[in-house]
Length: 254
Image (cartoon, rainbow, N blue to C red; front, side, top):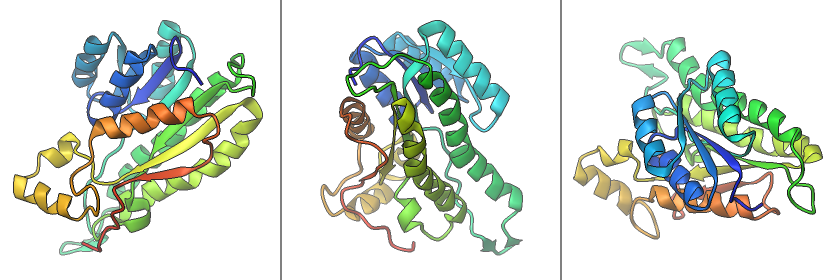
């Protein structure tokens, strides 16, 4: 699918991979809406790219429905949706203070997994009502973000890893279901990407992490994630698949 002129919605668009994806989509001519809990950060990126910023809690149905409606009013129904919103608080299932509070687990799953599904169900409903834009009948594409933790979850990542495994598990059945209306669904599993969270770590920790990547032995860049999104959008045969973007790393237990 061509990108120019189409509306795009990006969650977690105020920083990191979401922000860079917004920049690349806008540069290609898309009408970009950035959804983020941090409205100030999203507004800064939106101002830079000529897009729209909306505060949104993807785990809340009313907040997300209102945000998608505002984006639709401004740019039309989205044909491109990229979900980057997520949290990754480390916490052991059984720690020194006893079992992990259930609320801690539920919060991570609600944002990372339920939030992804929440956005996907809403944009897919809009996409289904649009006219096809290719000879094959394509109406839209949804790109979700999981993590290599879905496969190589480390100690302290039970909540995060299982939430991201859920996103991986959504991919194929969602793609099969939405095939009838010409909507593709893909998932990217990033490895160690130099997002603000990782770049805020001490340099020696960053260097240690980078050495774990077989090749290239460095942290990934948000623009590399965004470039993969751009290719997925443009390549109609990519559907129902999960792509690891990780330099061949396989995470150790800790």
